[in-house]
Image 1 (cartoon, rainbow, N blue to C red):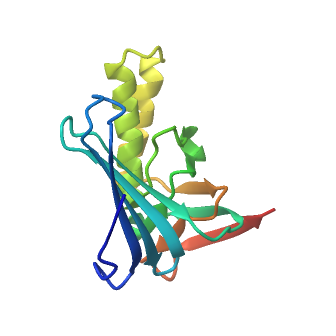
Image 2: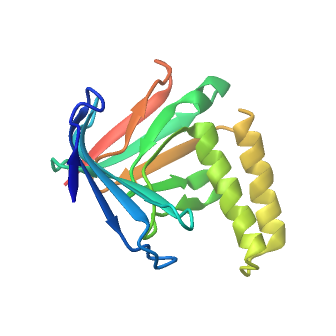
Image 3: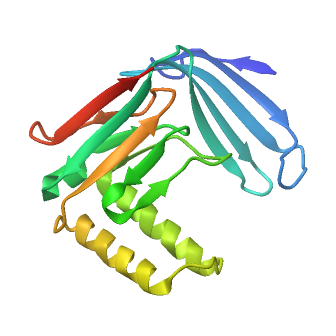
Length: 188
């Protein structure tokens, strides 16, 4: 383990670098960076990035250092400008669009990411394409219908709701229109 310069950015408090074996190629070329980082709006988090210089494997994770409450965020998308709402989605969050009966659940290697509503819709389209590529049994007519609906949603033609359910309370909204309908629920 090696500690490096604390002054990489004004937000980094401590930075550590490790080198270990990669879980995919088993070579000792996996570099792990751990940074205690003060993210505006999130407070202190541990940012863990893993990158293998041999096979290209990479993974980034954001872990809160302060416990927050379970949060559920509802965003009503009814106009084209609502599609620009920026979202920080944690690796523990589920994203649901009830109008199409679709849900993106976190997996073992889920990453925290920042996107907008358009990006979330694209992730749903990508998931449907992956189902086809992997030949996962599904009803082809229903998949085609859902894809059409998602594309109409992405053009602002069909109103819908995005629900982000985050048990760790890390997910948050940024850069949204003042007249976008948003409800934030805190659960015990």
